[in-house]
Image 1 (cartoon, chains in turn orange, blue):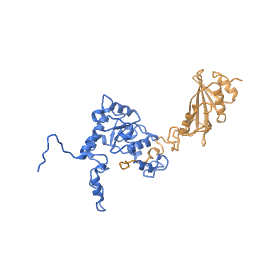
Image 2 (spheres, each protein chain N blue to C red):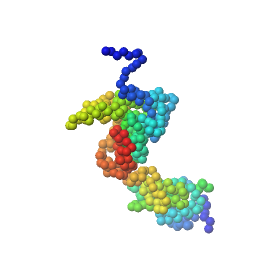
Image 3 (cartoon, rainbow over the protein chains, first blue to last red):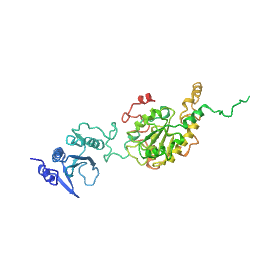
Image 4 (cartoon, helix red, strand yellow):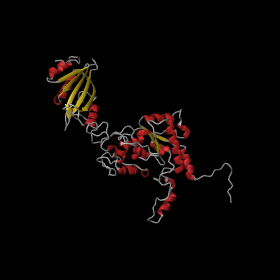
Length: 168
Length: 237
């Protein structure tokens, strides 16, 4: 069976292949909520269907968000350079060990994007070839975009050796 | 017996002469990280023409500079770089903290931004503004020139041989640092306006005074965030 092209009928094809997915549309933008166990399969299906551009991988921390039941909501923004169709895929994960499978094998652009999400939110991307911090210093221990991390930090910004005139 | 001097001979002290040479040939190290750097470039460009004050030779090698101009916010990831460059500069050297961010962190009161570089390296002049006008930076350089002329170098280290010998022969029990205006750490009563530490009220001031959670002030620096060990610093110094 040839995979469907990324047109408006990609969502029915996706629903047929993975029953039980939650979808919604808002102003022409389609969103699909995927459970973490099948996230890699769904994204592989979409990559094979012609979504050849991973625009962004990012995350939202829903701690203390009204009505939220899951803590972290990952966002995958997909696009097709051939048909200009776009699709948003959401994957929700929870504490204490939030983890999803990496999509670096599908889109190379996921490399740094997933490293950034790991750095800022502490989401573990299983199978990532080089999951290091992207922005914060290597010795940093926290994940600063989590909502329970204080805006002014925990003293890291003051934690440097002090150089005086005598030091040269 | 009065010494007969020709009209074209001027008598001065050697350290004043050295200070006069130094203050008129400052070579800035442009540590420009943000919009203040644009004003710094404007200061060096034709309209404001920092060359009028002998400070136009911007060098990007710290080995060739004696004035570090920190223009812009310094992130905590950048601070070890800043400190290393400061240590790589040769004596005598001075530092201008240009703009609100370099002096206090400015509006960036977040985990990632250092709240004033003077917490971690010595600073001679603070330039207020967001960003400061080139005129303000020029005023700071003029004030710094006055300071250099007045104080010699920042430590007076190369001129203090006689003082050091005097100190070493002083009988024990006497305060070795008493009564010398040119000792580092002695505050100059004639500090100019731009030398005054910019103040900010409210939370940031409290934040400066309060020990940080987990890492109280004065505690030993844990290996966390110590990007190079202290013996490296000592060796480079």
